[in-house]
Amino acid sequence: MKHRYLPMTEEDKKVMLETIGVNSVEELFSDIPESVRFQGEYNIKAAKPETALMKELMQMSEKNADLKKYTNFLGAGVYDHYQPIIVDHVISRSEFYTAYTPYQPEISQGELQAIFEFQTMICELTGMDVANASMYDGGTAIAEAAMLSAGHTRRKKVLVSSALHPETKEVVKTYAKGQYIEVIEVPHQNGVTDVEALKELMTDEIAAVIVQYPNFFGRIEPLKELEPIIHEKNALFVVSSNPLSLGALTPPGKFGADIVAGDAQPFGIPAGFGGPHCGYFTVTNKLLRKVPGRLIGQTVDEQGRRGFVLTLQAREQHIRRDKATSNICSNQALLALAAAVAMTALGKKGVNEMAVANIQKANYAKNLFKENGFTVAFDGASFNEFIVQLNKPIKQINQDLLKKGIIGGYDLGRDFPELENHMLIAVTELRTKKEIDTLVKELGDYHA
Image: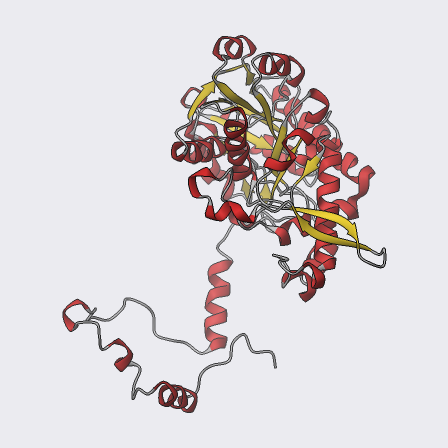
């Protein structure tokens, strides 16, 4: 029988207490005055046998609207994509999940090689020169990009597109506060960064401009137009990008981006109630030595055999405090492994087909909404997400959809007051024609 845990017996407890020289567990707390101790009873249920407890927990978990039982049209940064079954098999192997932070390269070669391949594939997707060994998530990766830009340019202002993910904007502002960096939003026009507004805001004080590609509204930002405006003032061009979309879109590196970062969640990583996920971080060669976290390098041993090592890891950063370019000291290597396995399983052709399927299905849904009298906001080129205007609060509509087995889209009114009663709908390659048709039909009474 497999035990989830091994309970401590009374005999075990007695031996442990005798070993440390006390008579009871209560004696361990004797230094705490009675006056500050909690004297009542905790408001928790009485202990149950394991079988009864598992049954109760299972019943509770079944109340969740999970993606196996419900049709999901919610994206906004976390997406429901195909996950090759081999991913869970590989990351469940003990030689990988026990080496997720590979401090000892001599015994973690498999993990290091996998992350080296992750770096390589991420560079190919983004069109950049160097990728690190992953970060916590997309939001913190972009915040690190902002801090790197400020340190590299020695400037104290960062521009962020208002079409950047709202939570990412907040993370950037939080990081910036500690470094006394001013974060200024660039307004959007028709759902993409306003080029004329950017020109007016660009000065010699700007360290970086951050845009999202595709952006939070699903629109494709005009990176070719933005790049010369940014580099004319010697600021860094930072792009937050969904890596799956780059299987079909021109990579930001081709448009002159200095830093491309984001979240690898679309590749083999489940939604997981919002995490854990895996941030990626790529730069041009000129910024190689300022990359936060660590990189995995390929080398040879004394016998000329290929091997992998942790290289350029900024361990000294942890004692430099406010002078450090970054204080990140760990990463999501196990999730980077999951992403690497997924990308390997899909292959270059598979990633392209998956990205194209997202575009095709989202466009089918968008056109179907139009045909049924709905108003689609910011119409134009997009990737897997678009906005539909409805006639009631989105929260209420989503509650109605949930009763019919559908997880609705994101309520944009939460972050953009001017988009109240607008729903951001995500259509991935997993959504079928029948599911899309059903969504449009169920929303039929709500079109504005």
